[in-house]
Length: 162
Image 1 (cartoon, one colour):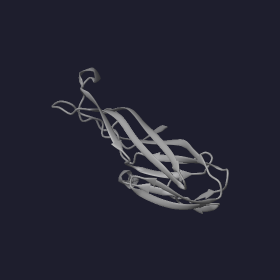
Image 2 (cartoon, helix red, strand yellow):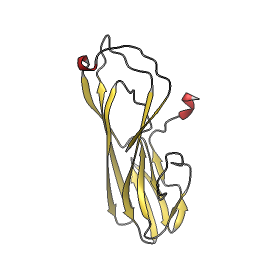
Image 3 (cartoon, one colour):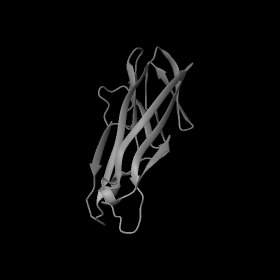
Image 4 (cartoon, helix red, strand yellow):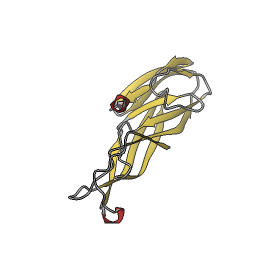
């Protein structure tokens, strides 16, 4: 798992961390997710470069939260990724969790953008036709074959920072 940062830092308020109330937040099956056979997988090619699927070649799940987190108002970002192979369908579920500031008068955050993505090993498949299912979406692919196997509920727009 990794966090990436981009943007310009602008201080809106300055409240000591110890005086801020935090709460657990979660997103279920939200973001952008692809199957990857790259070794190592790369955020630069996520959702852009078709992957080569070969029998016996390890397949990883590359998950991108596809949202910005403030470095001063977000803590403990993590994701739980579960997979279940049922016949020829790979079911994936994700729970993104983080601590977020409960906003109140006098509480401000940096206007910056910490991005979060994670890569986890998933399966090794034999020759055949398969489906990946995540967030109510199904994407079919063949092994052997070349395909872009991705599903999204939202995609981060990096042009906001150009």
